[in-house]
Length: 212
Image (cartoon, rainbow, N blue to C red; front, side, top):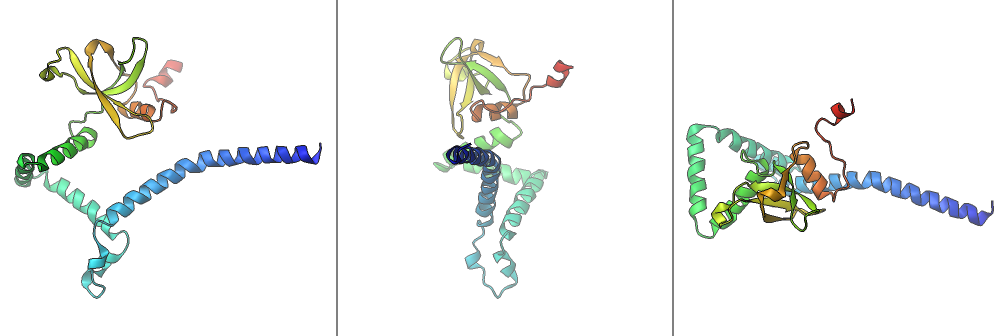
């Protein structure tokens, strides 16, 4: 084998190893950077510059303390909200924000988004296939409102269709006849499949039993 051909083979092999390493390290790196960004963002909620060095509270200047305090605060609020008296106070404050001009639009929008993902009334837990652009074309989405007759659309349902490789999506009002519920996969699997552009594998319920 000539030196030139050996050099080409070596270059091709190194390039293949490079992409193999990239496939392994890129998801890990993006995940670590995302977690680090979340950690730093939460940790910096408490401004360290306003805490004097010569004070019993100087420990607040240490990295990570702010993150822990925010987590403790969130857990404490969640615990106190289970109390009847405190929950009434939170409900009163919630009612006040929902009635305050301008603020109510921001507050209710953010509240509804969080309720949709982690609240007791989750909205993205009903994955479906929906026909929007054609009879033989199906998109993966989630029913957010089973009945939108209040909008003057009898027999229609609201379906949220997420965009691939993004945190955005669109809401479509479609006839119920064009919606097919997905009962053999979880909402998490459906969201992962849609956001990844369909490249990820789907863990179908009962898949192992089907092969048995």
